[in-house]
Amino acid sequence: MSKPRPSVQIILQQLEAERKPEYLEHMQHFGIQGENMLGIRMPVLRAMAKTYAKDHKVALELWKHDIHEAKLMAILMDEAKKVNEAQMENWAQDFNSWDVCDQACNNLFCKTRYAYDKAFAWSKREEEYVKRAGFVLMATLAIHDKKGEDSKLEAFLPYIEAEATDERNFVKKAVNWALRQIGKRSAYLHTRALPLAEALSHHESPSARWIGSDALRELGSEKVLKRLA
Image 1 (cartoon, rainbow, N blue to C red):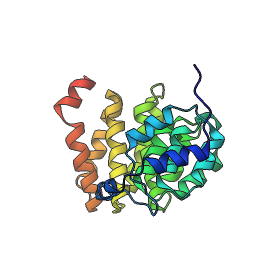
Image 2 (cartoon, rainbow, N blue to C red; image 1 turned 30 degrees about the vertical axis):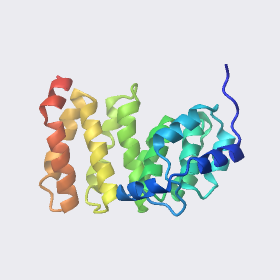
Image 3 (spheres, one colour; image 1 turned 90 degrees about the vertical axis):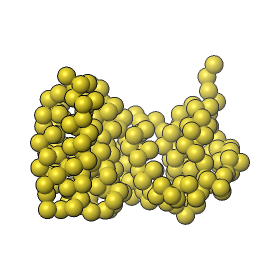
Image 4 (cartoon, rainbow, N blue to C red; image 1 turned 120 degrees about the horizontal axis):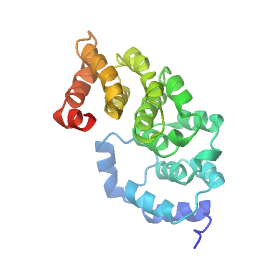
C-alpha cells in the first residue's frame, strides 16, 4: 500500500499538535538553537515523516517556514536525487543550529552526487555552521558511502589538518568527528589518520590539541584496533 502524498498545511498542523514547550529547555541544554522551536523530539519527527511518501516540492515549501521542526521535516521528506547545488547552498546559509546542520548532512546531503565537492568547499568557508557542515559531510560519508574508495576519504585529511585550529566549538567537534570516522573506516585509513591525530595532539593550538588527543584515544583503543585487525 502506497503512502499518502504529504500536505504542507497538514504537516504544520501536526507539528503544532506535537508542540512540547517543556522539552525546549532540554534542547537548549544541548546547544540546539532557534527562534521558533516547538520542542519536538527527533524520533517523533522521524515517525511522522515515515507516514508520508517523500516529496521534494513539499520539502522545499516546508523549509521556507521559520519553524525549527519544519526544517527538520523538510530534511526527512526530501528526495536526494532531486537536490541540486543551489538548494544545498541555500539551505546551508540558513543553518542556525548544529542539529539542523547535522540532520541535513546525515540524512540528505551525503546521499547527493555533490556530497564530496561540498565537503571540500564548505570546510574552507568562514560561516560557523557551513564550515561545520563540510566536516559533518566528511564524517557521514566515511560512515555511509560504503562503496567509496579509501583514496576519496584520504583526500579529506589535509583539510582536517588545515582547519583544526578553528576554536569555535561546533567546528572543532565536527573536525574531530571527521578525523575519527575516517580513521575507523579501514585499516589503511587508520594508518593515515593516526599519525595526523598524533601530530595534532602536540599542536600549539588548543583546539588542534583537543581534536588530536580525543581522536588518538579512540583510534588507538583496543576496540578499534581489534575491529580493524
